[in-house]
Length: 285
Ligand SMILES: [Zn+2]
Image 1 (cartoon, helix red, strand yellow):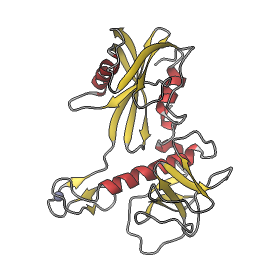
Image 2 (cartoon, rainbow, N blue to C red):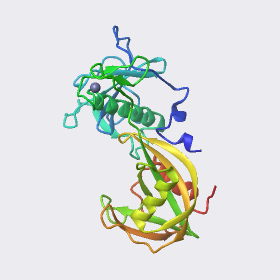
Image 3 (cartoon, rainbow, N blue to C red):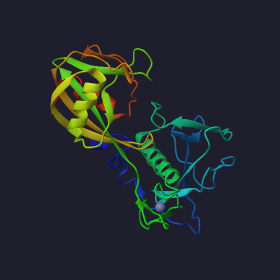
Image 4 (tube, rainbow, N blue to C red):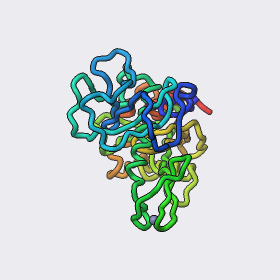
């Protein structure tokens, strides 16, 4: 079940209560989700990571006003960001929440991801993209309204397909130009104007690998807060064509036997890993 993937809400259901934003007049004590890039600031060397509780740890300089995003263990959880170049306070380390460190469990990684996505939206929605006016919050949600021109703006979540293409016991994998040699993963790409998701799958596989596919079926989806994508996963079967990478975005593409797969750049928390593990060896829907 893809709903139980990290960064999806099911994983924190009953543990974390999301709240819409509100102006806080009195700060009741609570927890802190302190982000630096896509990392969570945590006490250094802890075996079990917890959100810091009580006063904001000394030495942390928020880039923006802390924002209450929900309740954790019945108390407010406030998210804030520190600058990328900031030296961390003594006794703290920055743990990537996409990374493999088992000390950061999927629950905290999921909440950190949500905090990162919200803070990204808050930073990108200060001014109206139509007239440049300063935006005001629409009460009760994360949307904003422009007092100058009346435009309304809502969180930008970008749909992106990811697909495992099979040809018998072989899987089609590609190497993006940004990945180290020897690392391969699934074809993926952003939805374009005028496309259904299935059409996007067909186009991306054609563009990145020169292959035509058929029998496209949905397998699951994942919130991907890096910074704000919705990954929509598919399986597809080979139809025709010879493998030919585009040479720009994709520098290598090939068929790999399901028993001899190369290393993947996708972390263990990614839908790419889940699709490979669930459907890579003959799994089907
Ligand atoms: Zn405006």
